[in-house]
Length: 220
Image 1: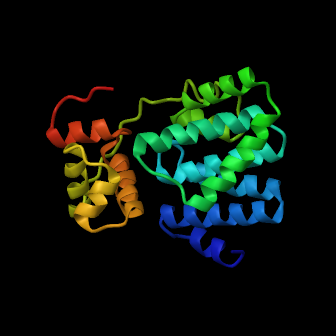
Image 2: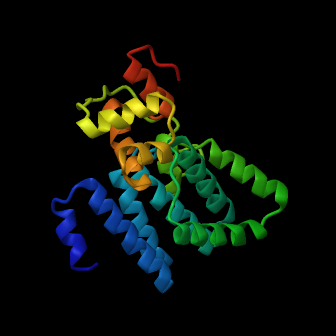
């Protein structure tokens, strides 16, 4: 990783760099160096600042583990709940071994809290998204990023043929698993296509993708 990261940082596509940084963070967690892991996960988030992309979810979960190991139980639960809610919105799941590691750390953190406090932290986390989630994950207070500037106009790029096909199937109401079977793709590949589709269209939800495909007015 020490040899690979400088090369990727010099010009690799953002997705490749994000995956490598997440791997480096996971290695640091395995070595017990939570500070180094936290720095790696934070670096990923700075390349995926909207907090809603597939690449942003792994570092948010990683920072939940870091918070749990540092004794920051409420922050750990909030970050875990935020990532879980985002995964439900974009219909994607983490690899089984990573999910088990995250859930185990968060469960240990939750055991240190009164049930009412743990429930409140989970509820607050499930409402975090976008710039507020990123700001909180990077160490800010719970309301950090609430006044982030959203006035800049998005520059939308055209979809590729495969991305257009995935978007049309989303508009037809198919799940990621159904789209994967229909197009002969891995489910993770479909999730990656959806991540790029949301970025290109400037939307966040499957409903908004469907509306854009249909050409109708967006409802938030």
